[in-house]
Length: 161
Image 1 (cartoon, rainbow, N blue to C red):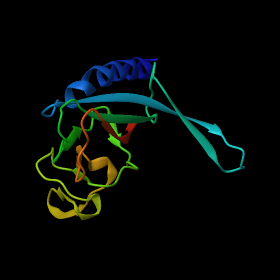
Image 2: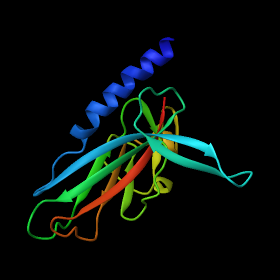
Image 3: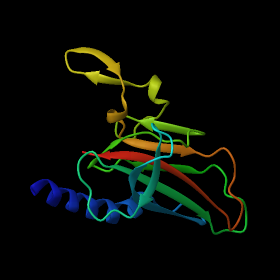
Image 4: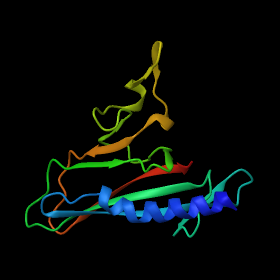
């Protein structure tokens, strides 16, 4: 019971905190959407189909999709966009399929790079290779402009702690 209560509080925090993490940029707006991944058996024996629904309650181990959408409200193309979002406190980063122009941080957003190139300091030992659970921020530095009155979305996944 306590786990579901804690998960409900986490969900409320995610839904209210995410739009603030996705701040405005220039003449554009950045919004976020949090969805719970639901798996259902597919037609093939080993395949699963995934759908995404508005979460009512989440429990540890649930997988969430966080979609960030930038809308260019200006009259000129939006260029040089930097879409950065912290990983919410109650989640572990669990990947993205939007890998173009994508990097991560494992040091609180101070530096970014491909996950495979990042190291994490270890007290009294040599640094170790960073893993998904070390990611603190995600970032897309879009190399292609977003046309006026158009939108572009990216998404990442998180596992509920």
